[in-house]
Length: 174
Length: 145
Image (cartoon, rainbow over all chains, first blue to last red; front, side, top):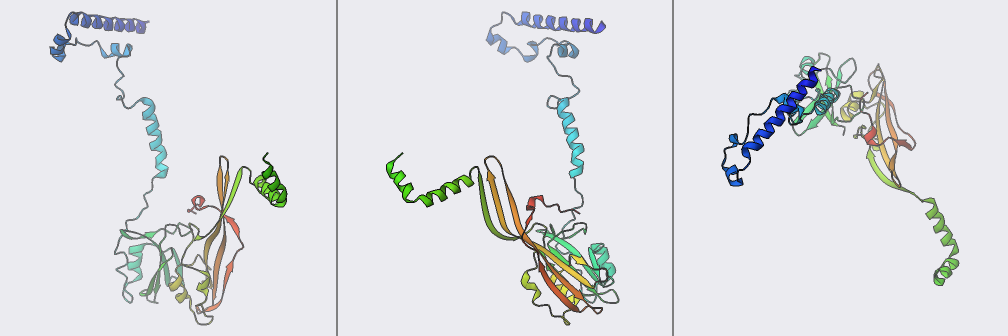
């Protein structure tokens, strides 16, 4: 009941505002109208609630470009996009292999630089790493990929009985 | 119908029948075989059938093999045998209907199997290849395990 009466008051306020504005400006020529400063061609506007009741104004909960439907769609897309986000792209390094020195580099240095190998042979005396490469340099690919897609090179490291690099080879597999 | 055309059809009746049969067979469907030669999307590309020739039984070592060919695709737990695998496509068959179409790829699987003794010396090797079979197009290949 109170809502209906409030709505009626709002509508009356808008009508009054509209009539007053029309009356004020009536009789003026277009040239006179053009000379008036902008603030004199407007009367104080009725309340925002009243304007909204007449369809003159959108609620301020969302800006004009962001309707509730659009906002909900954007929120839903953001939630769904979580599954597409990948964070495991390693940073390419053009000097990634420069530290390898046959007869000098130790197993620990290799593990610190490259992490766990994708495969090993001969009681971990032979280590294999899968490397990708782009214009910025090499990067180590994780071993979770079964095939050779996105892998450019196979790095083979042969260690001696003391865990020191004996031989190494960068084999292009793609 | 034009008399000349009828006369031509009667004079070459067997050619006309063949043409009519061919036109009937391809109604609404075009099958286009395209010979190609490439590796599949997830296959390694550093191996060829000729790569088995440098392997010498009793001489070549496991370390020499892996330093030259890279990481094997399969390794026995004790390292007594390793396998290198690759796949190639040799024929694409494009099938086009009125409003749809598709492609089938035909290719072969290859495997280079190598066995070593306790000292890591090559004892035997074999290059195996499968018969022609349909392979999923590259865009459908799932790369994750």
